[in-house]
Image (tube, rainbow, N blue to C red):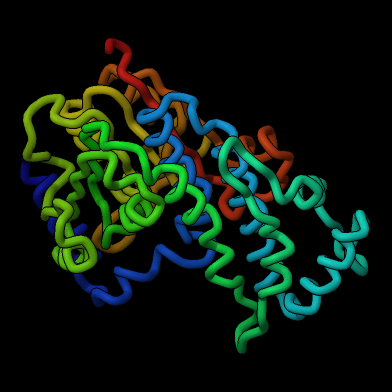
Length: 341
């Protein structure tokens, strides 16, 4: 690792170590970032489920995508002034097949989902979670809050669906794992025990948090610029919201290390990407907040021997379930598979 990467490493460590451990533990697991309903987190779990079971749970996955879109739409409504009152009128309108609730337009995908619930999907029941959420939501001082039990609907379904499955031995690597931000839901959804997981992070506070929550899981201090693992150690690699925070030279190095240590597939989440030819570089204090070029970033991982499938989250939601809204129009996920397997 050269001196520039060492300096960048020091800046990244400084940027995260300035926060207290409680903040690092909690800030990416609520609201639209809640991995139970965040589409990129859902897609990450589906990436693992597909790698483990190859199409076995396709219908259940489709229902969970719709669940995520519905709950995000309801979350947005709940945050508005008078959201609690809107919930009551929305439920009344949905039960009667109306297209609006006292002037509030009801998206077609929401009405369609409401009409299909409850649903039997193979051996599992998807409950009428829209009715349950609208009925259980209560006002707070800062707006309405969705009932936590309803947000965990698919957490319970997946745990039941996977509880009799046996570990498959897939080796999964997650650099920049944070305070087990997504791993805690791999665990609670019943996926973590099916894989051999390793998470690393530059921030010692994140690693302390992760180890405190999951002492039996391997979490270590580690640097994506210099992964301490032999070539092709891992079958799969998961990355969330990392690459935009790196210089372009560091992005190249990180992609190279991910390609070096990963054998089969990548699931990469981006929060700030566009379809222009060039990256937009913006340094912010000790790290970066770049807008990455879709084409250039995809080419970077193709150079590492992967076939890249880019997914624009907004377009994906509209195409799959007819949802016209997403909380981040710049969000993309890459599914990438090794060209030679």
